[in-house]
Image 1: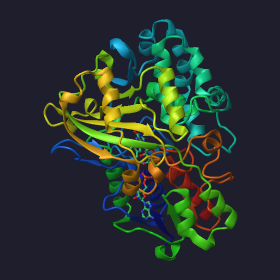
Image 2: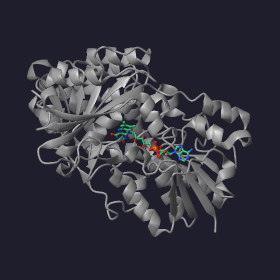
Image 3: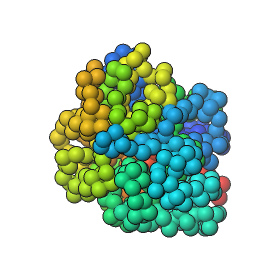
Length: 471
Ligand SMILES: Cc1cc2nc3c(=O)[nH]c(=O)nc-3n(C[C@H](O)[C@H](O)[C@H](O)COP(=O)(O)OP(=O)(O)OC[C@H]3O[C@@H](n4cnc5c(N)ncnc54)[C@H](O)[C@@H]3O)c2cc1C
């Protein structure tokens, strides 16, 4: 039997393992932590009975992919749940804007910007299935849907500050700022529209769902399917060199690029090792989980219904904050992403006490404490929030990296989303999953299509390995 070892049990490691196991390989997954799942773990962090997502929270790009279509994760216990509003953006004075699944319903709330929202998101939403077929793969391929991809690509390559000129109201511009900020990029840099645009279109096509019971349900479902194929998972095993994985025919590394160079060591061609060590990481997240009695008293009504709330004020304020972070300076008023997954999945709350998820964008490796800034930003749009906090759990950038070495200096998306790395990651190569050693592959979020708990990096890497085995 052909054997495979997968190092790391994040969603990409597990997706690679499943793809290989389904093809008949004997698979063992080795995980450093005591629990599987990498960025999809969840559990109690504040008060008994409250389920918090340790990392990934909402999953627009995991719902319908070649990977999710290949494996019955639903049958293995994964259920997606949607909040009434996908994402919202409060502004001062109780104003704000919200995105609902339907482009029309969203546009209807945007006044003068209704037409621009429809024109950008309408056609892309209609063609998003075709678009994802291309962008969920490495960029160097002949597109299957060149026309659909062309329009998406043309918008994506723009700096967000340029694409934002399509909207003229503070509400329309703020909505676009919120999704753009997910890229952790200054808004005036090339291709800074790409990630936000994809997430924005995905909100209309698939919504931004949470996993019932917590994001750990994603990893649990994959592990259950793996068990059905007879695959083994060992936890508490940190792999430091290839020698530790025996004579496996295929080795999948669900690790950061520099860690892959360390593990493969001298067997890796020097030029590839150099390229992987030069892989650029992005800024960091400083995360605080709250236990909140009665939920957040947002003055903007739709924010009280949204799975995600983008906090930071106007487009200009968020653009300034993101620029500061990229320069290595902590902004006074950082961008804060707030997750209210309990609105989609009430099973995570204990009565009227709810788990609230929040992280601020901070410079890479920042050693300060952003708790006060996060609370101040939320309080600005939800007076009385502080009085409802019953407990907190704080994760600094250093703690994030200690929790999972793939989040280098707190970079939760495993790699800067600059224009070059959006297209070529982790290095410029025809097959970006290979590392120059027969049978060894990189399959983490540092490879295409990048961050997210969608498993597509692992799926693609495993298919690359299977294609080579077939040859
Ligand atoms: C705070 C935060 C919020 C996020 N929010 C979202 C979100 O809302 N939606 C979304 O889709 N994504 C989100 N993400 C991103 C998403 O979680 C990651 O992109 C995804 O988990 C990457 O999967 P992966 O398999 O590549 O790596 P990871 O999930 O990082 O898993 C890597 C695994 O490998 C293990 N490992 C590493 N080195 C070794 C070694 N040497 N030996 C053995 N095991 C090793 C680690 O312990 C870990 O379990 C978030 C991430 C964070 C941290």
